[in-house]
Image (cartoon, rainbow, N blue to C red; front, side, top):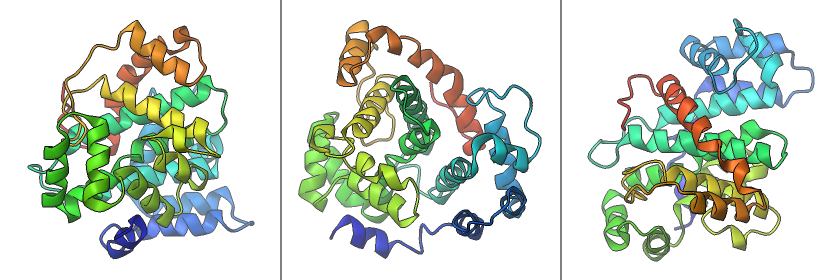
Amino acid sequence: MTPKSLVRSIHTLFSLPDVVIRVNRLIGEPNTRTADLAQAVLSDPGLATRLLRLVNSAYYGPRRRVETVSHAIILLGQRELRDLMMGTVAVELFQGLPPERVNMDRFWLHSVRCGIAARGLAQRQRLREGERFFIAGLLHGVGKLIFYSQYPERYREVLERAGDDERARVAAERQVFGFTYAELSAELLKSWRLLEHLHPAIAYHLEPGKATDCRREATILHVAVQIANHMQTGTDGASAGAQTEQTPEHLASFARLLDLPPESLASLRDEIDSQAREILKIIRPGATLPD
């Protein structure tokens, strides 16, 4: 079994809805107008509403309220809105997992925190397309959900072997499956044609030192995950560990990985705290927010 063969086997189970496929096709056509994209998005009123709520959230902080999908497209850009839409849809695709396998509210709160952290780190590194890092952080762990849904007993074996040790869990995933959730996440996003330039970064974010052309991007995702891990206990049943205080020493170690001054990360946790729960409520209506 490989990540590609597993993703191929679940293609119909986690296939994208028609509205996403249509928007993807329109973006690939040179003569597509903003009105064409807006009409496609509006064919799914629930999705259009969630997108507008996200664009008007504190995370984006628009100077004035965005009232229409067309305005949102102009504000964010076609591809950025497409990525945001696909990230929102991805949350819906995995709603059916039994709660005894994984606490989905905790999983997605952790994922949102990773997304916000990744975007903030990318901005601090003066990288363009910060929104793509948000989606990469949001979806970096969907491979775990595939493991949970398709091989619950084998993945429970992974968790029992590893306990709270992240490195042990990664090693156990390789022993049991032959690859990690990170590689599986990247393969799923590749099949969706999402975040094309960040697939290697997602695949290598557990061990960014092994990345070649995308080491900085992989390191951003790696640090984002570590920051989110320090903010939350019991994140997803797979990588949960005891919550630890995010001390200045932790921030300094994270900053060194990215050649940033430690003070540049001091405000990042406040950004995450102020935005993550609002975003979770939008993309996962009815979520019971953990502490």
